[in-house]
Length: 55
Image (cartoon, rainbow, N blue to C red):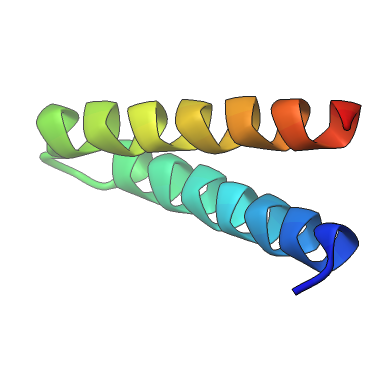
C-alpha cells in the first residue's frame, strides 16, 4: 500500500469515527465511556496521520 493510499484510509477512518462520536453524543442515554474510547482512537489516528504526513 502506498503512503498516499494509507493516509487516505486513515483519514477515512478518522472521519468515520468523528461521525460515530457525533451520532453517539446525540443519542438519548449516550454511553460516555464508548464516546471517550472513540475519541481516544480518533486522536491516535490523527497523530498517526500527522506523523506520516511529515515524512
